[in-house]
Image (cartoon, rainbow over all chains, first blue to last red; front, side, top):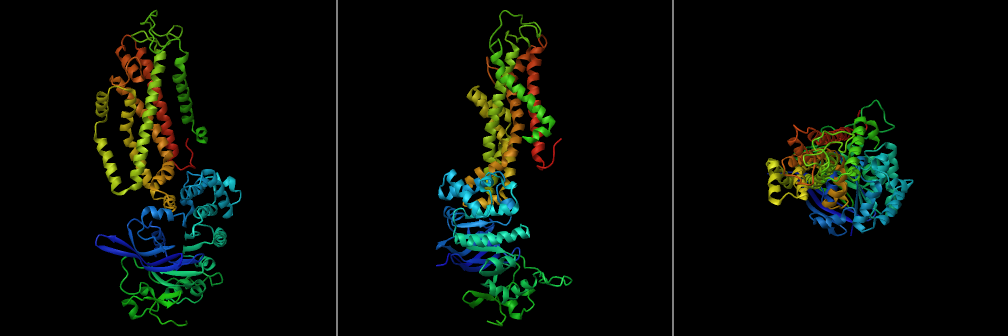
Length: 321
Length: 278
């Protein structure tokens, strides 16, 4: 049995009679210790999909479908049951470490809170464990840092603290929502290395939400490309990045800036803009921007097809297997 | 406490208020007269002199006005502090819950506050006093229970803003209950606003108490407060102006100092932490 089994997850925005689909029929699995990257543009629904796993999507959104974590159904679960999963079995790291920590509490208190809440630890025991956690996320001088407030730390260090909080109760799964986006490039690299190391040390499964393909290549074995709330392509990261089978993934990769590229040539940009919620027609959501779109693409929605792990939703003939 | 050094008006007001507080609290123990002691030997109509037995003269019953002013101050400040605490407790919890939960409950709770606002406050307090007798404790509760409305509104507004912050979402994702999020994450973040607001509520409450006592609805003889003393003094205004002047000065000075402190704190905390207040 896989650790996380998501099947047909849909998020809809119901406004009176109109119902807009934000995430449409998303399915994926994640085994213990495995890592999956969900890649997509801003607004493609990746964050809301991840939040929906813990029942905390935006209040206006309704989740349907199924998401089983260790066999336990998360979608529609009771609030009390979900609270026991949040933080304890599934850790969550946010994008911006500057705002995700409570400015009025010391770092130690915020880590200890997790242990007191989920494991019934006493304050001294929780603080001792918090010290070990700070060591684990490579923060030097842990005893002094525990007594500090978030504003006394740098951005990279705050994100390390966020990771320490997320790992405090030794979860099986860590969901990281663009964990490096708000940081300096050099600090980004350190954090990616740290996350890779921690995955091994804590035997973590990682669900990484990002739009940074460089991070994906380094951290995740598998990749899922999301566009306008629909899965475009999924498969082994090496395969998806080296030989993308979907025109959207191909276009995404073409749009990446290259260090060895000609700086006088403007960067490639995918023409057009993503559809707004509720504007997608009956066909493939990417068809209006796709350079290889055929007549059938506009009329019929392509089903996800493929062998084993590698699947894509596209009408084009697969060129090379 | 670093900001004290940079703000001269605030530091002067704090020092003066501290001196006044020490006098009011400790003073009566060192006075040769008790608060309700009548000096039968003295000349009650004599104007006050520093050389005489009564520095500020006596009231119409021959009691030393200096010591009565200090005793009255004790009571006024006590009522002020206790009522402020009551309004703080109710207001913060009510406002934080309404702002955090939001939606229909928020609408319901805040319209409730609006309804209470519409009640004539003085009338309300007077009715309470008449119904339950003039008990000191009741006065704390009555004033506090009416004064929390402003606090609740301010706190709710702040909570609405805090509610959208990432660390609240992070706390939810960590599996905290709403109750714990409010108490551990929202309330500490309200501290600066609440402290400022409490500092501004304190003089208001003291004034309300004085007003009630002036009307004769507040404290009862032989206990006294600044409001009651002003009331007594006002009756003797023409023959013994000092009996009005002294307690009135004490009351005014205290209110002025508290207002200065509250206002400076508001300026200090309403601005970005980096800018300096001069």
